[in-house]
Image (cartoon, rainbow, N blue to C red; front, side, top):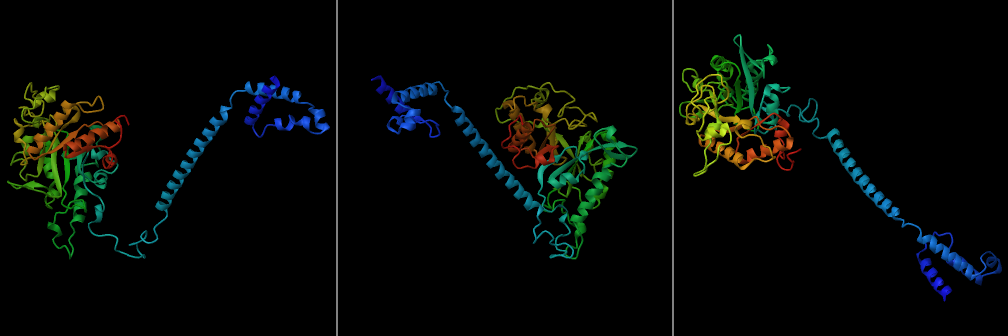
Length: 448
């Protein structure tokens, strides 16, 4: 009986043996029924059973061969990654091939000696294919190519910091950065005159080029480009020199101005900020052409919805509600000169800032709204932003926040996205390429 049981167990185990096993039951356990030569080597069934029993014990003591399955999965995963990587590589190489292999039909079209010779350009093609977007090129003079870099990406506003020394207007962020050849004329006024003369040619098809008023953007000739002049030295001393420096643009009819009842828009709109005194802008004697406008104090324009109450949490918020007003803040009764944006020679009431004298309403985001500590604007911060926009728009002014967060990039993009959706008219940007992307506010986490 024991032998029969052992034989049955051996039969079961045989079914699980690999075909690669060197010793098989069928080969040797039937040896007793074969010829005598084999029986001499493996002579009897009991010996076969003893071999099988030893084999079973050996197999039971072996660990399951799980490594084979693990290695198989690893090879499969690695093979999949290699396959996908090759597909991506071929896709990139295909794109590069398209970029570097010229289109035989259009690559040389319009060139001398080729099809379409002389047909590839036109008089006003300076900014061909550039669509204007509502961004302000902050500290524009820092760029490798001032003015042109901003126009190239479509910015409709540029900033120039102006210093007065020896009757000349120099451009730079600080005294240490000033050089004799970087002036308001060389970096902005003269280039703008050249651009606009090209955009307003006098030809037999366009005989009134000297009285037309196309702007810098060929795709939107009616769009005015704002030149935001940041007064760095004494505003009262700077003002007449800036007024005089703008004459090349003024004499050609390129400057936006007020005619007493309406704003006549032209290719260039000049706005004074920094130490620009409001008292000199809103004055017929000091601003006789009415073609320099003011950058009004946005913080003073907060307006809540009916019944809306917001507890002040900062000096700028207390300003909004008229409590604990500091004379150095926008909207106060201060009339001192040279105190910064929206403060120099300021009016006693925010209602003084209208389309008669102002275009922008600006404020430091960091000072007026505060830091975005949790990666998301709080409800009080959102109410401040909405109140600022509401008050400025009621006066017809364009909203601009400066000193926006610039890092982390995802946080910057989040703030940009919120401001645009809430109705801010102009993004104050240093990263021109980042501002012109269409998806900067859609997916990035604030930690990016």
